[in-house]
Image 1 (cartoon, rainbow, N blue to C red):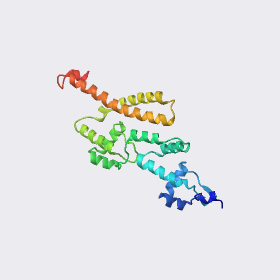
Image 2: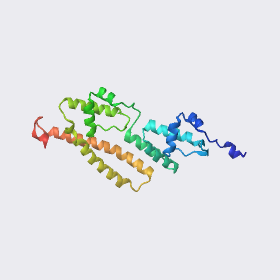
Image 3: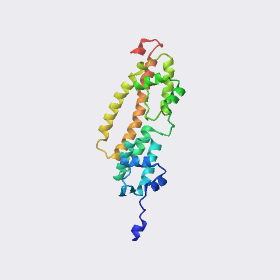
Length: 234
């Protein structure tokens, strides 16, 4: 045995890989099937050996899922970039800017209704009109709950879900324009530069949305003499 081969970590059987990662066989096989982990070296139909780097790679996948709540398709893109030697730190930083901390415990539909005051029918109506837009198929986060509670108060005051559909309609138009601007300013940049510039643009866009809409609203109120002034409707 040469010195170099003596230092090389040995390949792992599935049982050893499960013990090293703390993950069940079904999850590891799914990662392999989705090409998140490299395929094993098979020595017989019932015997396969996994490269030792699978341990670190599986841990990294789990951290991306738990800390950033990224879907596996996005994780695959990040892994492929890392494999090419791309610095993925800007991508992860951008994800943090866009989504913030994603460590909230997700609520079920039943829990969301109970805590917000919405009925199941109201929740379905709001979601169908894109007035509630959960990021995860697995449940609702704290931001969803805050908006659901606010919408429940509005509905109790006589507002109809249909009355609010101009919000997602105009929001799509704003986001379309923002994406067009982002493409124009980043399409010639490297992946790292693109992520860094996009993070700055996301922060600026958030500030701009809040500032301009609130200022227009405030100026409209300031120009009116009283609450039923026709100036409020112009």
